Length: 446
Ligand SMILES: *[C@@H]1O[C@H](CO)[C@@H](O)[C@H](O)[C@H]1NC(C)=O
Image (cartoon, rainbow, N blue to C red):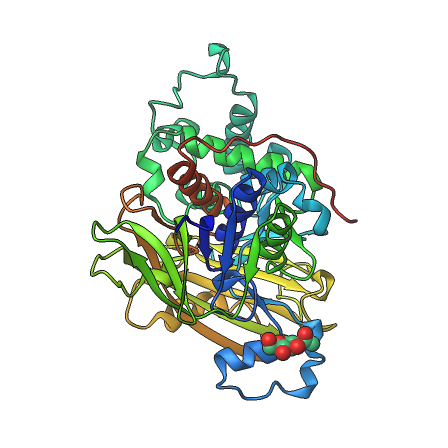
């Protein structure tokens, strides 16, 4: 029998939904299934009932939290960088027509025990309480250098070569203090650890420029966020796929990934019925147990996340209705940063006067909940807290040999850039050619 579909996609997380949307637009016949009765997989947004079902053994949500339908609580805390790669995909596919965006109101960093705004220009640097007088002058010179850099004009290079010299060499050239390096590398370049410092400076330069141009776009922070929560993103790509003939089935338990004698993909068995296709794409959770004995995913770490319901904005953030706070690893003696992402009723994700803050980090010890304490301590009184520890999985092979293409788990970064890296990577493996995107503008509500 011929295959009914070109591609079966398992799991409706954002990565899988972007891929099935793009593949459908490309003319591929796509069947998309999810074992859950809701969209989004690990990147879903849950209502109160779903949240308490998941974290509190079906206990009912307390009435004082308000109406179920006012809530869309993200399981994975990430924001969209205004000028980033996800934005490009959203506008390229015109998926923006299903979404409305709002700015995130502030971007903060923790230094020497205090929360401060992240300066993003030389103008802001000279006003920032993050630095002393002389350090401000050095930081101003550093930002001027970055903003003035032109590849083709050596007079802007000040003797540095971004492709050869390490970021350490660049910091040293401007004599920046370790604490300043912390906020530049972690709160602007958004690195999770310090590995970048000894590597060539170019990617860090690119990331700082991405941060500053995104910041310049809407003014308050480099981030935007979809009304009704991040779960709107996969659903919007699902709608795109459906327009181009993609078929979506939720609440479908997957019993078996069927392979032939040589280990190549044949089809997927759900409710006793096997559907065939040329290729399968899926999130790692569908490949943890192997039906043919081949190990296709491995764990490469864990992330701890605490979803906290607050009845007040986070202290010391100018009463921001939403914000990101980064606690650089060095500031609290760790190897990975701690992130706080907060949204509120302004984004239609919870009841009025409620704030949802998610504190997360990469697990380094056997007591992950203790590791996020420096973040929890910044929140003030916490009304409800839901803690989860998630395994991060990565595929063991490219999938080209067996037509089984596996995506990666959502990492601990504060944005979607690595999700788009994964989309591009899987696309290239599945289609054989790189994903090419055009650029248009995205509108943001005031
Ligand atoms: C909340 O989620 C539950 C479970 O998926 C669903 O049955 C219910 O309709 C949702 N509530 C609202 C108000 O959407």
